[in-house]
Length: 296
Ligand SMILES: NC(=O)c1ccc[n+]([C@@H]2O[C@H](COP(=O)([O-])OP(=O)(O)OC[C@H]3O[C@@H](n4cnc5c(N)ncnc54)[C@H](OP(=O)(O)O)[C@@H]3O)[C@@H](O)[C@H]2O)c1
Image (cartoon, rainbow, N blue to C red):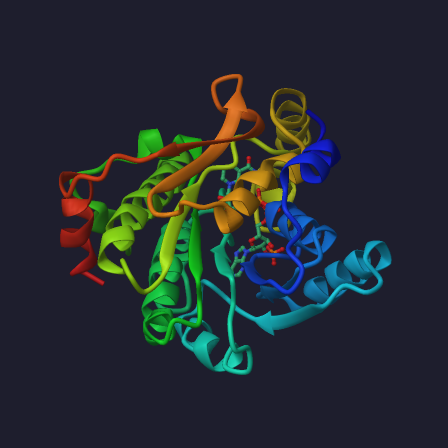
């Protein structure tokens, strides 16, 4: 089914709803904002680069001239920026879902966040963890209805008995670092769905494979040739960014929520429209992660 057909036939009106999306200036985050606006919702784009965010907003407004779009600054590789999040959303009485989507894949060697964490794991997981910590009071107030975490199909390759090994030291394989960061997100989501039960609903998703800046943007250190080939490959075998982002959108709006996991239905779950499964919760699945978190 085509993206627009899915939106028209499967998604409800989202009039009056408000969604916050991190990493919203490109790729899946941008596409998710587009879908929310299409269904009548308002969006808050939480981005690290305000110029890019303003350009993205301009583009969205061309398509949705009456769209309500706010921009806030959010750098998931900088704890001090992350900690400003509760203050920046104070003026909104209620947010229907916060979608923690920002992420990077292959940023280059020997790069660290402002706080000294290895860049991929530091941005994708540790920054996300700090964001959840920062929002905990807001969850208690009941202001945020749902939290969506974005993992990846490659999280299968990211299991580790000692996640803390990846916190301050890069692994030689950037694929492994990325897979570990996405595995931690998955396990952390399982944990949050119980520890935050009654305060905020938690859902998880993985978007399959989509041709975005994740392999072909400024934030990657792939050679130009690889970026070109990677984007072509993802385009041929995966989804468009719009279609993959439907997994994020469904995770943000569909009930029942707790432990719902949304991912593409077809071709080894890398393409197609969203499918939902309910994850089986067992403390065993996140015990190691919790131990590693004590190193932060
Ligand atoms: N595309 C796929 O096939 C795929 C598959 C599985 C999972 N995912 C996940 O989906 C999410 C979105 O990726 P995408 O494919 O849409 O890639 P993308 O087009 O590169 O988008 C990533 C977004 O995250 C932002 N970002 C990166 N580092 C950030 C930071 N430190 N603080 C705040 N924002 C930051 C980027 O901002 P800038 O523009 O400023 O860099 C960009 O807006 C990621 O978490 C990715 O791991 C993607």
